[in-house]
Image (cartoon, rainbow, N blue to C red; front, side, top):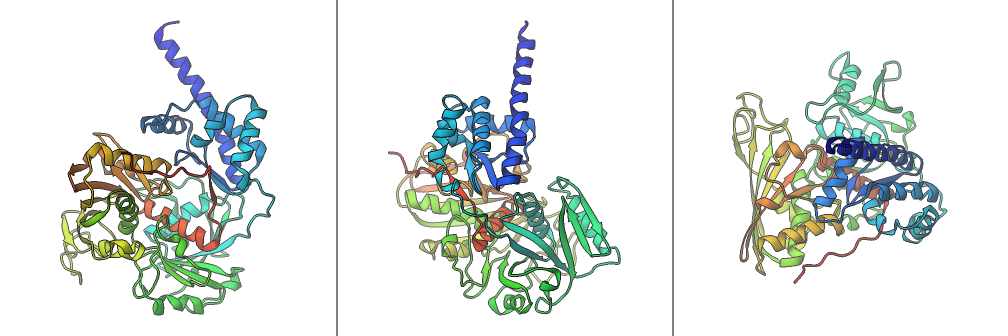
Amino acid sequence: MNDFAARRDDWKAREELAERMIPLIGGLNRDRDVVTSLHGHRLLGLSTTEILEVHERVAGLGHDELPLEDTLAVLEALRELAPSAASLDIGRLVEHAHGDAAEIVGRLRTELAPALSASAPAEPTDVVLYGFGRIGRLLARILIAHTGGGSGLRLRAIVVRKGAENDLVKRASLLLRDSVHGRFEGSVDVDEENSQLIANGTRIQVIYSDDPGTIDYTAYGIRDAIVVDNTGRWRDEAGLSRHLESTGVARVLLTAPGKGDLKNIVHGINHGTIEDGDRILSAASCTTNAITPVLKAVDEAYGIVRGHVETVHSFTNDQNLIDNFHKGDRRGRSAVLNMVITETGAAKAVARALPELAGKLTGSAIRVPTPDVSLAVLHLTLERPAEKAEINDYLRRVSLHSKLRQQIDYVESPEVVSTDFVGSHRAGIVDGLATIANGTDVILYVWYDNEFGYSSQVIRVLEVMAGSHPVVLPVRREVTLHA
């Protein structure tokens, strides 16, 4: 057999192993509400070649090569163990994948004990999306994909202002097709008679209203719902409390920075402050979610004396396509033709989630002619000096092993550009090759999908509010700065 044929046969064998994983990954999620990943990189919904690619990626981040046979063995053991709702890192569980099938099951039983209890599945929590724009539709996609066994969040309705007689058809089309994030994975149908969208079997009631306080959600079978306000029209407690006047609403989550005394939650940082009595919460902004976890990690290891955050942000619907009147400075100029200097409250907002950085950060922003994925440049003065290789290695390990691995990703490639991060589930991705370190002066570059990455963070906050955030196993090792 020549060398080409041998390589081709090896590739086909690897493909066959990956193909066998797909029904196991899907079945665990569908039947047990279990989400699987490899060192934080999600497996659910991946194709055969994408499963192979993610194995190569984690090896490139400093891990030992992960044999496909071991991944498959762990997935087969999980099918037998039938854990309850959990987020399971197969990359870490593979450490126990030695011996025959029975031995692997035995080893994993101890490691997964918290997810093997016989407790009944939690009752699903109804979710209503108030507003169905960029973030609203991405939240819908994620909620539908996470339906699983039905014990977590359950998308029940969207509330919008009627835009046309064929409004339902247009809403369905916007959910189905997206110029940035691609086609919806599945089918979207319209039930005109009942004013519903049907996405992968999930019936979503479409309610037309312009007043958040006058809707009787119970008329649609919706009770104790969390309303996610995506409109940004109301940002303080007084305005958002109008949702609580509607029958069937229990709590409200704002997908924008909250004003006044509202808690601004960045999952991974201060989600532990969420209390049962909190009726209204904010999920902060996309930029705040992107930079706060990185700042937290750096502050813990090196201490931050002061810093400046410069965000290079994709344009948004708030800007004009061509020059026209806008109440904001400079934003009236064409978003697709200009770089636009504007303001950002993200630096000050960090202190709402991370009080130890209060008064230490300033911020500014430039809007640029791209539709998605932004870049935060963190200019930091540290208490202790850092070398580039050292701080990069620390952040790489944080992205893989720490309590912030759902929020922080890390990449080292001389070829990556903004579109490579479309669809990232992480709040921010540290670009290691761009890091500059000179004693106590450090500059970090953090990419973030300001749409999908932020929406993923919103879902995590929703899960905490609903008490359905899955247990994360195996327990993470703490990452500490090496000498």
